[in-house]
Length: 326
Ligand code: PBG
Image 1 (spheres, rainbow, N blue to C red):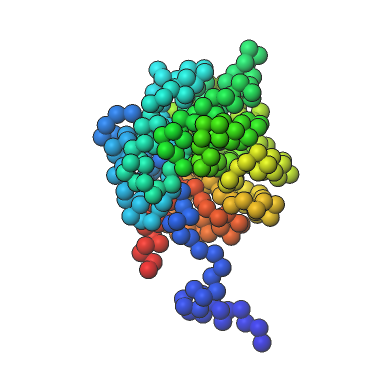
Image 2 (tube, rainbow, N blue to C red):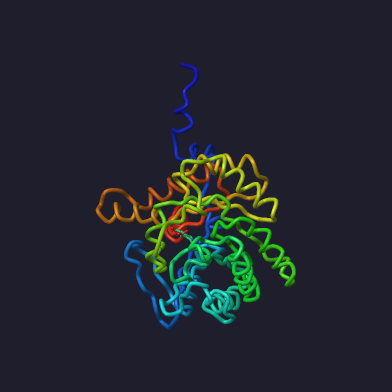
Protein backbone atom coordinates (compact mmCIF):
# COMPACT_ATOMS: atom_id res chain seq x y z
CA UNK A 1 0.00 0.00 0.00
CA UNK A 2 1.53 3.33 -1.03
CA UNK A 3 -1.26 5.62 0.13
CA UNK A 4 -1.93 5.40 3.85
CA UNK A 5 -4.02 8.38 5.07
CA UNK A 6 -3.60 7.14 8.65
CA UNK A 7 0.05 8.31 8.61
CA UNK A 8 -1.23 11.89 8.92
CA UNK A 9 -3.28 10.93 11.96
CA UNK A 10 -0.54 9.03 13.76
CA UNK A 11 0.46 11.57 16.44
CA UNK A 12 -1.16 14.62 18.00
CA UNK A 13 1.60 16.79 16.53
CA UNK A 14 0.95 15.58 12.98
CA UNK A 15 -2.81 15.86 13.46
CA UNK A 16 -2.26 19.43 14.62
CA UNK A 17 -0.27 20.28 11.49
CA UNK A 18 -2.96 19.10 9.15
CA UNK A 19 -6.01 20.40 11.04
CA UNK A 20 -8.03 22.48 8.59
CA UNK A 21 -10.39 24.36 10.91
CA UNK A 22 -9.92 25.84 14.36
CA UNK A 23 -12.00 27.42 17.06
CA UNK A 24 -10.77 30.66 18.55
CA UNK A 25 -12.47 32.78 21.22
CA UNK A 26 -12.10 35.87 19.01
CA UNK A 27 -14.66 34.33 16.65
CA UNK A 28 -17.25 33.52 19.28
CA UNK A 29 -20.08 35.85 20.25
CA UNK A 30 -21.70 35.28 23.64
CA UNK A 31 -25.45 35.96 23.82
CA UNK A 32 -26.41 37.80 27.03
CA UNK A 33 -29.85 38.03 28.62
CA UNK A 34 -30.29 41.21 30.63
CA UNK A 35 -33.04 42.17 33.05
CA UNK A 36 -33.93 45.07 35.36
CA UNK A 37 -32.85 45.24 38.98
CA UNK A 38 -29.66 44.75 40.94
CA UNK A 39 -27.69 41.67 41.96
CA UNK A 40 -29.92 39.43 39.90
CA UNK A 41 -28.64 36.27 38.33
CA UNK A 42 -31.58 34.09 37.43
CA UNK A 43 -31.06 30.61 36.02
CA UNK A 44 -32.93 29.66 32.85
CA UNK A 45 -34.34 26.22 33.45
CA UNK A 46 -34.16 24.91 29.91
CA UNK A 47 -30.62 26.24 29.40
CA UNK A 48 -28.44 24.96 32.23
CA UNK A 49 -25.48 27.27 32.84
CA UNK A 50 -27.19 30.28 31.22
CA UNK A 51 -28.62 33.14 33.28
CA UNK A 52 -30.52 36.37 33.03
CA UNK A 53 -28.36 39.08 34.56
CA UNK A 54 -29.11 42.50 35.95
CA UNK A 55 -26.68 45.04 34.50
CA UNK A 56 -24.30 44.93 37.51
CA UNK A 57 -24.08 41.12 37.42
CA UNK A 58 -23.73 41.15 33.65
CA UNK A 59 -20.53 43.18 34.04
CA UNK A 60 -18.99 40.38 36.11
CA UNK A 61 -19.95 37.81 33.51
CA UNK A 62 -18.56 39.92 30.69
CA UNK A 63 -15.32 40.48 32.60
CA UNK A 64 -14.73 36.77 32.81
CA UNK A 65 -15.71 36.23 29.16
CA UNK A 66 -13.26 38.97 28.27
CA UNK A 67 -10.50 37.26 30.22
CA UNK A 68 -11.21 34.12 28.22
CA UNK A 69 -10.62 36.03 24.99
CA UNK A 70 -14.23 36.58 23.98
CA UNK A 71 -14.54 40.04 22.50
CA UNK A 72 -18.14 40.18 21.32
CA UNK A 73 -21.52 39.92 23.02
CA UNK A 74 -25.07 40.13 21.71
CA UNK A 75 -27.70 41.57 24.05
CA UNK A 76 -31.27 40.36 24.55
CA UNK A 77 -33.70 42.07 26.93
CA UNK A 78 -36.00 40.38 29.38
CA UNK A 79 -38.96 42.74 29.71
CA UNK A 80 -41.51 42.49 32.51
CA UNK A 81 -45.08 41.71 31.41
CA UNK A 82 -46.48 45.06 32.52
CA UNK A 83 -44.04 46.89 30.22
CA UNK A 84 -45.10 44.95 27.13
CA UNK A 85 -47.80 46.22 24.79
CA UNK A 86 -48.99 45.62 21.24
CA UNK A 87 -46.85 48.53 19.92
CA UNK A 88 -43.59 47.50 21.66
CA UNK A 89 -43.45 51.01 23.14
CA UNK A 90 -40.72 50.06 25.58
CA UNK A 91 -38.41 49.18 22.67
CA UNK A 92 -38.25 52.80 21.58
CA UNK A 93 -38.21 54.51 24.98
CA UNK A 94 -34.99 56.42 25.50
CA UNK A 95 -33.17 55.22 28.63
CA UNK A 96 -34.74 51.76 28.49
CA UNK A 97 -32.99 48.61 29.67
CA UNK A 98 -30.89 48.00 26.57
CA UNK A 99 -29.77 51.63 26.36
CA UNK A 100 -28.45 51.41 29.93
CA UNK A 101 -26.94 47.98 29.41
CA UNK A 102 -25.07 49.03 26.27
CA UNK A 103 -23.86 52.26 27.85
CA UNK A 104 -22.56 50.46 30.93
CA UNK A 105 -20.85 47.78 28.86
CA UNK A 106 -19.08 50.32 26.67
CA UNK A 107 -18.01 52.38 29.69
CA UNK A 108 -16.46 49.33 31.31
CA UNK A 109 -15.17 47.53 28.21
CA UNK A 110 -14.50 50.07 25.49
CA UNK A 111 -12.87 47.42 23.26
CA UNK A 112 -15.72 44.96 23.52
CA UNK A 113 -17.85 44.59 20.39
CA UNK A 114 -21.37 45.18 21.69
CA UNK A 115 -24.17 43.91 19.49
CA UNK A 116 -27.83 44.54 20.09
CA UNK A 117 -30.53 42.17 18.90
CA UNK A 118 -33.08 44.32 17.13
CA UNK A 119 -36.57 42.81 17.12
CA UNK A 120 -39.83 43.56 18.86
CA UNK A 121 -40.69 40.17 20.35
CA UNK A 122 -39.36 40.80 23.89
CA UNK A 123 -41.40 44.01 23.94
CA UNK A 124 -44.73 43.00 22.37
CA UNK A 125 -47.53 41.59 24.51
CA UNK A 126 -48.19 38.91 21.84
CA UNK A 127 -44.54 37.87 21.40
CA UNK A 128 -44.36 38.55 17.65
CA UNK A 129 -41.48 40.36 16.00
CA UNK A 130 -43.73 42.92 14.41
CA UNK A 131 -46.74 45.16 14.88
CA UNK A 132 -50.15 43.77 14.01
CA UNK A 133 -52.53 45.65 11.71
CA UNK A 134 -56.33 45.75 11.85
CA UNK A 135 -56.49 42.39 10.06
CA UNK A 136 -54.39 40.82 12.78
CA UNK A 137 -51.43 40.29 10.43
CA UNK A 138 -47.83 41.10 11.28
CA UNK A 139 -47.48 44.30 9.30
CA UNK A 140 -44.12 44.67 7.62
CA UNK A 141 -44.09 48.37 6.89
CA UNK A 142 -45.58 49.45 10.22
CA UNK A 143 -42.75 47.56 11.92
CA UNK A 144 -39.82 49.09 10.02
CA UNK A 145 -39.81 52.55 11.68
CA UNK A 146 -39.85 50.92 15.12
CA UNK A 147 -36.88 48.73 14.23
CA UNK A 148 -35.07 51.79 12.91
CA UNK A 149 -35.81 53.75 16.08
CA UNK A 150 -34.61 50.87 18.21
CA UNK A 151 -31.40 50.73 16.17
CA UNK A 152 -30.82 54.46 16.60
CA UNK A 153 -31.27 54.15 20.39
CA UNK A 154 -28.79 51.28 20.47
CA UNK A 155 -26.32 53.26 18.35
CA UNK A 156 -26.73 56.32 20.56
CA UNK A 157 -25.99 54.17 23.63
CA UNK A 158 -22.76 53.01 21.97
CA UNK A 159 -23.58 49.70 20.24
CA UNK A 160 -21.00 48.70 17.65
CA UNK A 161 -23.39 46.53 15.69
CA UNK A 162 -27.16 46.21 15.48
CA UNK A 163 -28.49 42.76 14.71
CA UNK A 164 -32.01 42.75 13.25
CA UNK A 165 -33.53 39.31 13.85
CA UNK A 166 -37.10 40.09 12.85
CA UNK A 167 -37.14 39.00 9.16
CA UNK A 168 -39.26 41.92 7.94
CA UNK A 169 -38.66 42.75 4.27
CA UNK A 170 -36.49 45.77 3.56
CA UNK A 171 -35.39 46.31 7.13
CA UNK A 172 -31.67 46.34 6.43
CA UNK A 173 -31.98 49.21 3.95
CA UNK A 174 -34.43 51.04 6.19
CA UNK A 175 -32.17 50.73 9.25
CA UNK A 176 -29.03 51.63 7.28
CA UNK A 177 -30.66 54.78 5.98
CA UNK A 178 -31.94 55.75 9.43
CA UNK A 179 -28.56 55.18 11.10
CA UNK A 180 -26.75 57.19 8.43
CA UNK A 181 -29.21 60.07 8.72
CA UNK A 182 -28.51 60.26 12.44
CA UNK A 183 -24.75 60.23 11.91
CA UNK A 184 -24.12 56.61 12.86
CA UNK A 185 -22.32 55.62 9.66
CA UNK A 186 -19.84 53.57 11.70
CA UNK A 187 -22.42 51.34 13.32
CA UNK A 188 -22.56 47.99 11.55
CA UNK A 189 -25.49 45.75 10.70
CA UNK A 190 -25.39 42.02 11.36
CA UNK A 191 -28.29 40.75 9.35
CA UNK A 192 -30.07 37.58 10.35
CA UNK A 193 -30.37 37.01 6.63
CA UNK A 194 -31.56 33.43 6.66
CA UNK A 195 -33.58 32.84 9.76
CA UNK A 196 -35.81 29.80 9.72
CA UNK A 197 -39.14 29.30 11.51
CA UNK A 198 -37.57 26.81 13.87
CA UNK A 199 -38.70 24.73 16.82
CA UNK A 200 -35.16 25.06 18.17
CA UNK A 201 -35.96 28.54 19.55
CA UNK A 202 -38.24 27.27 22.34
CA UNK A 203 -35.80 27.66 25.27
CA UNK A 204 -34.98 31.20 24.14
CA UNK A 205 -38.64 32.16 24.26
CA UNK A 206 -38.84 30.80 27.80
CA UNK A 207 -35.69 32.75 28.70
CA UNK A 208 -37.19 36.00 27.46
CA UNK A 209 -40.72 35.27 28.47
CA UNK A 210 -41.75 35.91 24.86
CA UNK A 211 -43.86 32.82 24.17
CA UNK A 212 -46.27 33.55 21.29
CA UNK A 213 -49.81 34.44 22.32
CA UNK A 214 -51.26 33.56 18.89
CA UNK A 215 -50.23 31.95 15.60
CA UNK A 216 -46.67 31.22 14.58
CA UNK A 217 -43.81 33.06 12.86
CA UNK A 218 -44.16 31.35 9.49
CA UNK A 219 -45.29 34.49 7.65
CA UNK A 220 -41.91 36.10 8.27
CA UNK A 221 -39.36 33.43 9.25
CA UNK A 222 -38.33 30.99 6.52
CA UNK A 223 -39.62 27.53 5.72
CA UNK A 224 -37.05 24.90 6.83
CA UNK A 225 -37.74 23.05 3.57
CA UNK A 226 -36.22 25.84 1.45
CA UNK A 227 -32.70 26.75 0.50
CA UNK A 228 -32.92 28.96 -2.64
CA UNK A 229 -34.97 31.42 -0.62
CA UNK A 230 -32.01 31.80 1.73
CA UNK A 231 -29.85 32.87 -1.21
CA UNK A 232 -32.42 35.51 -2.13
CA UNK A 233 -32.68 36.82 1.45
CA UNK A 234 -28.92 37.05 1.69
CA UNK A 235 -28.58 38.80 -1.66
CA UNK A 236 -31.22 41.39 -0.72
CA UNK A 237 -29.67 42.09 2.68
CA UNK A 238 -26.28 42.48 1.06
CA UNK A 239 -27.67 44.94 -1.49
CA UNK A 240 -29.43 46.85 1.27
CA UNK A 241 -26.15 47.36 3.15
CA UNK A 242 -25.62 44.49 5.58
CA UNK A 243 -22.04 44.24 6.88
CA UNK A 244 -22.28 40.71 8.27
CA UNK A 245 -24.60 37.83 7.43
CA UNK A 246 -26.04 35.36 9.92
CA UNK A 247 -27.68 31.98 9.39
CA UNK A 248 -29.88 30.51 12.06
CA UNK A 249 -30.19 27.85 13.47
CA UNK A 250 -26.78 26.31 12.74
CA UNK A 251 -26.44 22.54 12.83
CA UNK A 252 -29.58 21.67 10.92
CA UNK A 253 -28.66 24.29 8.31
CA UNK A 254 -24.99 23.59 7.53
CA UNK A 255 -25.84 23.29 3.82
CA UNK A 256 -27.23 26.82 3.92
CA UNK A 257 -24.08 28.14 5.60
CA UNK A 258 -21.94 26.48 2.93
CA UNK A 259 -24.04 27.82 0.04
CA UNK A 260 -24.27 31.35 1.37
CA UNK A 261 -20.53 31.37 1.96
CA UNK A 262 -20.06 30.71 -1.75
CA UNK A 263 -22.54 33.34 -2.82
CA UNK A 264 -21.44 36.28 -0.68
CA UNK A 265 -18.19 38.10 -0.09
CA UNK A 266 -19.42 39.32 3.29
CA UNK A 267 -18.36 37.55 6.48
CA UNK A 268 -20.80 34.80 7.37
CA UNK A 269 -21.82 33.82 10.88
CA UNK A 270 -24.02 31.14 12.35
CA UNK A 271 -26.29 31.20 15.39
CA UNK A 272 -26.03 27.96 17.34
CA UNK A 273 -29.39 28.53 19.02
CA UNK A 274 -30.98 27.82 22.39
CA UNK A 275 -32.50 24.46 21.45
CA UNK A 276 -29.19 23.22 20.08
CA UNK A 277 -27.58 24.12 23.40
CA UNK A 278 -30.43 22.71 25.50
CA UNK A 279 -30.40 19.30 23.80
CA UNK A 280 -26.71 18.79 24.49
CA UNK A 281 -26.99 19.97 28.08
CA UNK A 282 -30.00 17.76 28.78
CA UNK A 283 -28.20 14.70 27.47
CA UNK A 284 -25.01 15.62 29.31
CA UNK A 285 -26.85 16.04 32.61
CA UNK A 286 -28.14 12.51 32.14
CA UNK A 287 -24.60 11.30 31.59
CA UNK A 288 -25.39 10.34 28.00
CA UNK A 289 -22.74 12.40 26.30
CA UNK A 290 -19.84 14.73 27.05
CA UNK A 291 -21.06 18.31 26.59
CA UNK A 292 -17.62 19.82 26.08
CA UNK A 293 -16.67 17.35 23.37
CA UNK A 294 -20.02 17.65 21.62
CA UNK A 295 -19.83 21.44 21.65
CA UNK A 296 -16.31 21.42 20.27
CA UNK A 297 -17.31 19.02 17.51
CA UNK A 298 -20.50 20.95 16.73
CA UNK A 299 -18.77 24.32 16.51
CA UNK A 300 -15.99 22.87 14.39
CA UNK A 301 -18.61 21.49 11.99
CA UNK A 302 -20.20 24.91 11.79
CA UNK A 303 -16.80 26.41 10.94
CA UNK A 304 -16.08 23.65 8.44
CA UNK A 305 -19.38 24.44 6.71
CA UNK A 306 -18.07 27.98 6.23
CA UNK A 307 -19.00 30.11 9.23
CA UNK A 308 -16.44 32.77 10.11
CA UNK A 309 -17.95 33.49 13.51
CA UNK A 310 -20.43 31.74 15.78
CA UNK A 311 -23.02 33.08 18.17
CA UNK A 312 -23.36 30.38 20.83
CA UNK A 313 -24.48 29.83 24.41
CA UNK A 314 -21.53 27.46 24.70
CA UNK A 315 -19.07 30.33 24.13
CA UNK A 316 -17.84 30.38 27.73
CA UNK A 317 -17.40 26.59 28.00
CA UNK A 318 -15.66 26.35 24.67
CA UNK A 319 -13.33 29.26 25.46
CA UNK A 320 -12.50 27.70 28.84
CA UNK A 321 -11.59 24.45 27.13
CA UNK A 322 -9.51 26.17 24.48
CA UNK A 323 -7.55 27.85 27.25
CA UNK A 324 -6.86 24.46 28.84
CA UNK A 325 -5.59 23.05 25.55
CA UNK A 326 -2.52 25.30 25.46
C1 PBG B 1 -36.32 36.97 18.20
C2 PBG B 1 -35.20 36.04 18.33
C3 PBG B 1 -35.32 34.68 18.52
C4 PBG B 1 -34.05 34.19 18.67
C5 PBG B 1 -33.16 35.25 18.55
N1 PBG B 1 -33.90 36.42 18.31
C6 PBG B 1 -36.53 33.83 18.69
C7 PBG B 1 -37.58 33.86 17.69
O1 PBG B 1 -37.40 34.31 16.55
O2 PBG B 1 -38.66 33.41 18.02
C8 PBG B 1 -33.74 32.75 18.95
C9 PBG B 1 -32.44 32.47 19.52
C10 PBG B 1 -32.30 31.17 20.18
O3 PBG B 1 -33.15 30.27 20.12
O4 PBG B 1 -31.25 31.02 20.81
N2 PBG B 1 -36.31 37.91 17.26
